[in-house]
Amino acid sequence: MYNVLFLCTGNSARSILAEAILNRVGIGKFRAYSAGSHPKGEVNPTALELLKRLNHDTSSLRSKDWAEFATPEAPKLDFVFTVCDKAAAEVCPVWPGQPMTAHWGLADPSDVEGDEITRLAAFRETYRQLHNRLDIFVNLPMRELDKLSLQERLDTIGQSLLAKE
Image 1: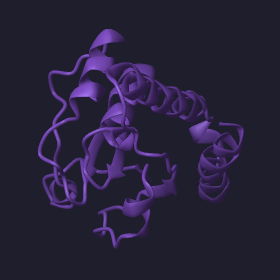
Image 2: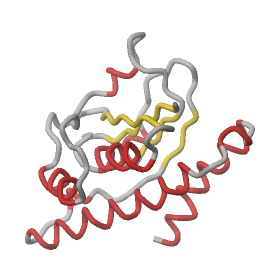
Image 3: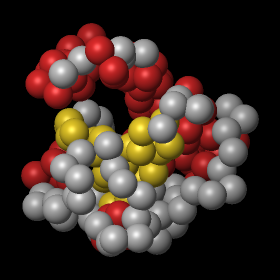
Image 4: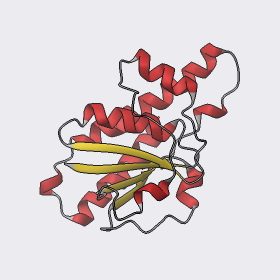
């Protein structure tokens, strides 16, 4: 079982969506978590609504500080992904075990203004982009790749899909 942490500044939307998606598509192989450098303290209501509509279990989702994952009691992380530009530019804690890292930056759907339909469409698009990336990630032949090859693939997932999206 691989442990994956998704980081974002507020840990209220993108990283929460990524956590929920990976816990579904990677069941039995991956365990996903999310955190923020400056957590908002609550999950974005539109993110929760979308996840519920898509039949995700949202009962354990909460906005949390990344410091929770830098303690000796925290799960050993195998991968850490930043999903927003602000978190990628910040100095991250030192993660025990030196997990693989990659930046998969996405626009913040929480910043979209407008009516409920417009806001929900932004969250759906972010969900789609994350789902595409995570589908590729869970199907990588982890045991067959050396660390450098795996790092290159992780970086490529974020870069090449970003160009297509």
